[in-house]
Image 1 (cartoon, rainbow, N blue to C red):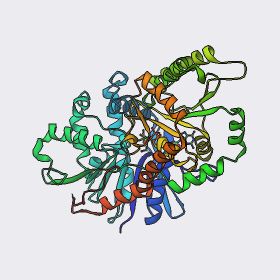
Image 2 (cartoon, rainbow, N blue to C red):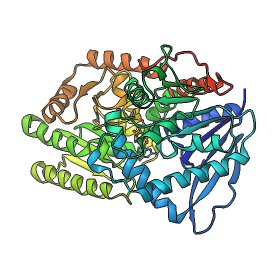
Image 3 (cartoon, rainbow, N blue to C red):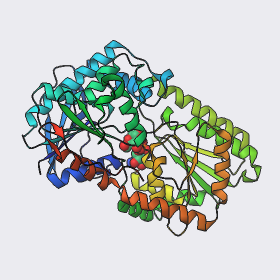
Length: 470
Ligand code: GDG
């Protein structure tokens, strides 16, 4: 078995003080098995030609970090990646701001990634590229003579062709994806959307009956690989954190009130404004809950240099302020809204302390917090997950109360149903979801994808059809 090389936009070296997040844990477990290489931007921008990668070896894994040109970074990261591809792929056309300068920077940074990576590769490597920042990387690597198996996994949704073709260079984007041998998506919906693009560009004959895609001489496998969580580790974190001082202080401060919780990066795709409005409607419609429920929303700031993120922040402050102004009492605040980070284990403790998890994105590739909420629960007395039908996780977590996040009345009704749900039903839903979460955990995700890469031979992929979601 060759070495695994993972490539992602940003990598951070493991630090003793900070546990890696869900994705990093998955990638790391795969890399440790093969003594692999993790390649990506190290966080530094420079005013000159980026130097050679910095190499660090930790626990058998080599970390190679590169610099990027300051003059390109903003257009590449804040611009094309997060102000064009992110909104478009999440079906937010209004949020998309396309410019040729941004696209040029995106292409140029992908060329830099390819040029800096190639000298580090060995002939037996298998290369796994992550996410929308690096879609053209496969083609750039091929142009530089790379013949090793190349895989790409998209962590966010893939839009149907009718949405995708709003992008002036959508055909190049689709062609770039077909440079890989394996292309992975979170859900069957995303795979179908990709097929719609392939059919549009290359004709229905490109889609083979066994699921492979043939473009000229090249055969690739596009499939579903739902990302999961490290079940044992989240369970341990949650069970241990519940008795730590920070979680106990939070629980004590509830004064016996039931806790509803949301944990989301501050991002317009996460549906926070709609969720706040639904909570206000819940208090209005079911006033017996006034003073008896606390909603804790943890929303660490992200992408603060992108305008849409500053706007959503303002709307949320207004919405939280309105609800609190309207319903708060001298000894009760309806919404506790925090823009800060917590250690992962503490978050898992907060999730365990909650009776209801509110995960209502307007669109989400998967949503790991939904999975973490279920896994962190006390199996004897589990809380209830309210989950958007528009999150990838809804395909697997059918034991959640599934809601349309735009339907204020349905979400507020689900809040009441969750708070009143009897224990046997909560346990039944929890057990059903745990079965799926164990089957599709983070190790299954890395194993399935790396196996798919191992089956790539001579530039064409011969991969058996993989199990999809639930
Ligand atoms: C993208 C896709 C897809 C959150 N706050 C803190 C913190 N977190 C952790 C959570 C969870 C992760 O970050 C967030 O993952 P999500 O899946 O919820 O969301 P995105 O960041 O949008 O991720 C998404 C994912 O990629 C993986 O493929 O599921 O659809 O959009 O693990 O617990 N961790 C720490 N402090 C925080 O304050 N340490």
